[in-house]
Image (cartoon, rainbow, N blue to C red; front, side, top):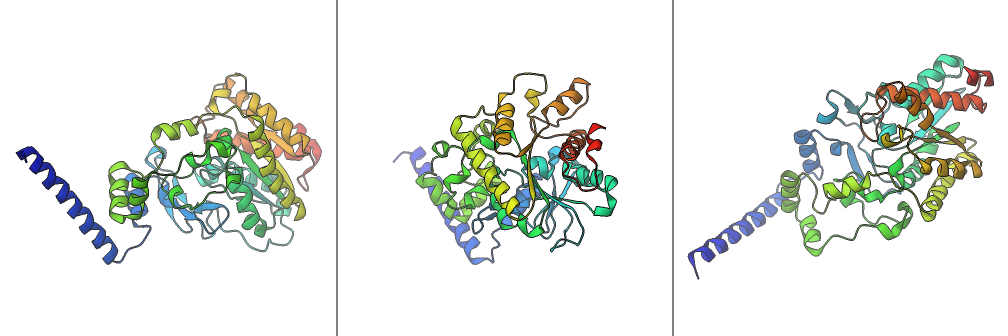
Length: 368
C-alpha cells in the first residue's frame, strides 16, 4: 500500500471514530431535540428557531409558543410568539361578549416578515376597525405562519382557529401557494413532518423524491445532523438554494392547481359558515406584477372565488397605484413594507365595508 493510500485510510478511520464517538456522546449526554435548532437560530439569527414540527396535528408545523428571535436580514425587527403559538397578543377564549372578531389565516405575509408586529396588516386592520366602531371591541387575530399554504391554513383553522369563535375569516393568498409546499415549508422543520398528505400539494405529481438511503441514515445519526446543521446550515436532505429559489417563483396555474385551491378554500369557507362566520380571500401581489405586466393568475383566482360566492379582495390595483406614485410597497418579491401592509389593511376595510360586513360601519364608508 502506498504512503498516500495509508494516509487516506487513516483519515477515513479517524473520521469514523470521531463520528462514532460523537454519536455515543450525543446519546449519553442529556439531549434536548431542539438544541441544534436553537443553536443555529442563535448563530445565524434566522427564523428556524421559531418553528416546531407538529406531525401529530393536521397542520403539520407551527410557531413555537413563547419564543422570540431577530433576523439579520430584517435588522432590528423582533419576532415574538405568544403562548398560543402566534405572532399576536393573547386572545381570550371564549370570545368576549359583544366583540367583533376577525381571524386571519396566511403565511409569512400575514405573519409579518420584515415588519414590526404592530405594522402587519391584521394589526393595522384592527386599528382601523377600532377607530370606526370602538363600541364593538373589534379584534383581528393574526394566525399567519411562515411557509404555510392553503392546506395548512385550512387545517389550522379547523383545529385551532374555530376555537376563537370568529365572525369573519380572511384567508391570505400568495403567488407561491400553488408551488410544491415542501420547498417553502421551513427547511429545518420539514424533515420532521412525517408523511405529508397528497392534499397538501397543489399537484402531487410534483412532490420532491424521498431522501436517499445515505441521507436517511444521516437523519437518524445525531452527530451527522449536528455537522450538517453547523457546516451546511441546513438539516440533512433539506432543499438546495436552487430548489428554494424555484419554489418562490410565481406560477401560472393549471386547471388541477386551481381545482386544488378551490377545494382548500371551500373547506375553510364551509367551516366558517357552519360556525356563523363570513369568509373572504385576500390576494397579495408579487412584485413583478406591480409594473402593469399581465397577471392572469389573479384574474383566474378572483373569478374562481366569485363563482363560489366568496368575497375576493384583490390588492393588486391598490399596490400598483401606490407603486406608480413612487411609493415603496415591497421589501422583496413577496413581502410588503409597513406601507404595503397599511395599504392592504385600508383596502380590506374598504371592501368589507362595501359588502356591509362590518357592524356599525355604514356602506357609505366604502365611498370614502
